[in-house]
Image (tube, rainbow, N blue to C red; front, side):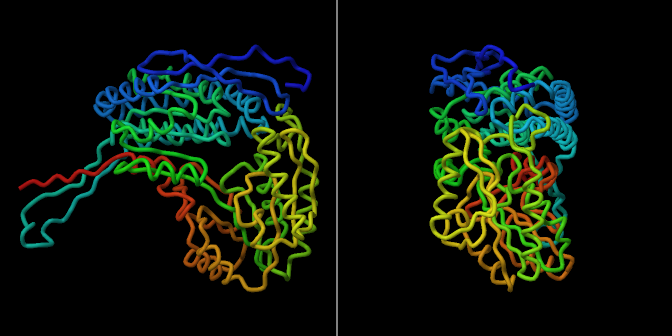
Length: 479
């Protein structure tokens, strides 16, 4: 799509509740952040809509639990094939709606389809455990097993930055485990999620198994309502803490924020590390919880690393998200770009040196690379969520491992080194959800257990691991 191509009339999105499409009394505009055109009208669900969705999901939880694993797998495989067939449509919508580069939007949609296939495979591998009761005199002669059953109703709340991927990471495992769900996408990316859900529904899941509501008004209700058994949320730490305090005895999976620490040791492949850090510091306009934000580089290789990073940054193309030649599009909206711009300006006023920096144009920001920063600057200590990262030299690495472990964040970190001893020290020492060796903090494969500790969250995503969270154990003892 060229920058001069005219857009289609705005799409009016509807909720899906109890197997029916339903309009809402109120709607909000959804705008293309690059062109500032209205592309959709999103519903603002009422508390009655939420109540109906909750009742629908509760009623559907029984037929979903009764579906045998091979039937759930068949439905998920069918849904994955349908998503694959509509990759172009969903990907283009995502690029228009979020400002994400079209190339990335298409890849995200393709990966979502692959993820649904992985969920289908896990649907027939949900296992319990045999308990050896003869380990004690009172248990001898008895047979015991831990068995897994669906929790019931799952509430899934997704953000704008990976709208299809993260919807699939919640919807797929919930259905694979035999649950029903209520999905609330971000008000800033509702249309592509609507198209994704619309596509998945064509696979033929039981009525009421998949319900969608929209807008922030209904958020507290679909989290705290007693008909909900499990809450899966991806978003900010502040909202994550509110949810954690509101759920009572419900179990939750919270995937929250981070500051993307990545180490480059003196024995690393400096060229590979520089390219990876540059690309993963600005990819998706930096709007990823694990985006590279703080790069710690050994003083011995610091200058060469900086030189190579800047060469790579200068080769990255920022522009029209709908142009397949574009590497990085816009942030989600102009307000987000202004927030990042102010954080960078604040750091520069405090003494940071911009090695690369581009003026803002609406919702679009160029790459910003900072040096001479310190831990008191928000660009280092707080999640920036934009195409900006800092390079910090070091001599001793162990104190940095300790500082990261003692910080409030603990999502993922990366370390480039050819030392097995140092790699093992990193995984043993750094208190974080994952350590990626010879890769950045931003590396993720969809089948792996992904998530954080401390304020970065709890629980793990990835089909096998989400399904484990979305099922409950029941002990069976045969006397």
